[in-house]
Image 1 (tube, rainbow, N blue to C red):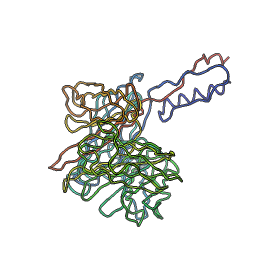
Image 2: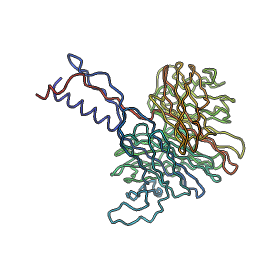
Image 3: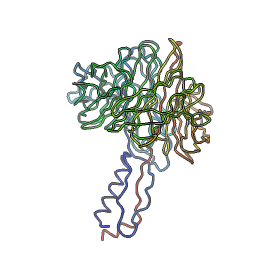
Image 4: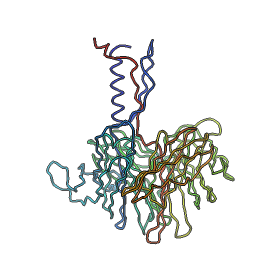
Length: 517
């Protein structure tokens, strides 16, 4: 291997360690081995984007920031959340911000130094040392989206939870979402353009240049016609909501939205508000795959709907199974599901969990065809109904993190669909006091378990959970929060993929200094 090739690999490895956005797989060497297996190193910088929480004047929102303790980090670093500008979409469906970066002091960052006249309602949140959550609160309907960056010791596994309570009105209940890193493609199965639903696609651009976005909606008969969903501009440092019903004249439930970014990158999430059964955030589903897992269906769910879409040219035939506490079972009457190419299919599973914890597992019955999927879950009856969404998710990986947990109202669901696994769960110190506690669980193959959490001793405030597989097959996880405010019960579910705390970096196996002679 010549000096140029070695320099390229070393430079790329350094970049991977700094960004944390990719793992490097170097080309095979010719001759003697020149590199050891890739080592996991802590990321040194990461970004998170939070959508504007609510338009309701009676909304109360909390933000919780948490960084797990990670070996190998330095002693310095910082994390900050800055407010993004927010403007509603115009009648053509384009989303245009003013391009200004409204700092946390409410002042404009424009060159002329003038304020844009908007109230920068936002939490005051100063992240604490890794291992301890920090909490900020805001209220009302003027709270903007947030642009977050973390560096140094605050970067590995940095997690921010946005949780909003709304007592009355459309979408009332508890709405929660994990702030996400920017990306260039998103899938949202389960949205609606019906009159009783108000679904907003929130897009946040963290960069200095505008992002250009295309949006496609797919229903039961294929793509929906739209003249305004292509070439939408999201201005720099801004957050913009798009009302999905303005993109098409067709009124359908159980749609799939595909968001692709032509230039730049964004964060995206859908806020789905129902006039009768509450609402929640629908986070982006996992990338298309032939097998999918949707963990953490509440055991008291009264109605569960599965929404599946296949983006390729071939139809998909799927086996539908529920991972219950006793093993994998097939819901009565729903052994398989046929999904036509580029069409969205909805399957009503009713009260599929029947009082037990459960996770839905989709696998191909024959030829593998990639699909995307999500669940809409309803709890309660009559006027007491509330809604949450569970998108298909990736496994926990090395470690997953969930912030904003309380002594009561938190449920952690773990499932191991492909083999028995041991899992270590750690409850962090509380935001206002308390000592971290850990516990290890064995999750049998094909089962889902709602585990008894190791609540921090002497807990004051909220705490974070970290989930770390110890041995065995892949583990999927979801956290449910449940609260009651002014007599209104609400719940929200967040899936727990890997928290991006480390990145794979190859180690050199020889002294490269000899090549400098």
